[in-house]
Image (tube, rainbow, N blue to C red; front, top):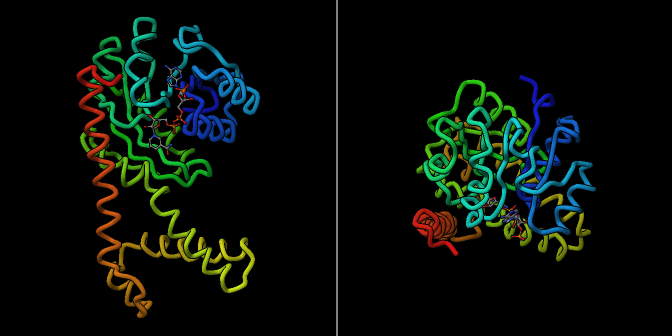
Length: 269
Ligand SMILES: NC(=O)c1ccc[n+]([C@@H]2O[C@H](COP(=O)([O-])OP(=O)(O)OC[C@H]3O[C@@H](n4cnc5c(N)ncnc54)[C@H](OP(=O)(O)O)[C@@H]3O)[C@@H](O)[C@H]2O)c1
């Protein structure tokens, strides 16, 4: 299966929609194999111009006839969007949702029986192909559909298979995680500036330490304590900091679970 032979519709030209378009174009998917749709006219026109792809409305034939429809809109809009095209989309097409809080079963029940659906929890480092994108597969995903999902995941970075009921935790761990770790980089950069380094050098030092630490953590043979022992000086209440990040993921999980309940009961507006 060659990704650049597929026709794809990206619904939503916000952060994630633009990351998808950027990576798809970067992967040499021809511009005329892609369409983009968004209810914000300025945003969709800007994306259309930037990536050289056609902007369309949801009911456009190019959406219904796409090999895969990639949904990257706010969670509360997902159900209405799928309802708009559900009856026109042949069950041979693949639907991929990047939205938090919308379970696979809810999407499957709106589409025609047998339509393959996958859910991906995106994250912003995918902009440079360095994301980690958990994916949950619906009941109707065929080997061909899975191959297409994997090809899309491949241009975004790493991936791993998750259960649908793990996705709300993944929002905090993955989806919102960049936001959580950026303040660490910001603080370390400020320390470099205080020491008289340029902002660029300070940022480089902070980012490289984080990158190096993360790369070390990917080595399975070192425990967290073994890694900590490599740097004996403790300057923070590490237990409190670790708990803070755990709580951040838990808070995101609770928020999204609440949103999911509303979406599933039709009370999201
Ligand atoms: N950004 C992340 O790092 C991240 C991480 C994990 C998960 N996600 C998920 O990814 C999805 C997209 O996030 P995002 O950050 O890209 O959001 P975003 O920047 O707000 O973009 C969403 C876009 O979808 C458009 N939209 C909403 N309803 C629509 C409709 N009915 N028809 C057409 N377009 C519509 C929005 O337009 P309006 O503004 O006019 O409504 C907006 O332009 C969300 O479901 C989010 O849960 C994002």
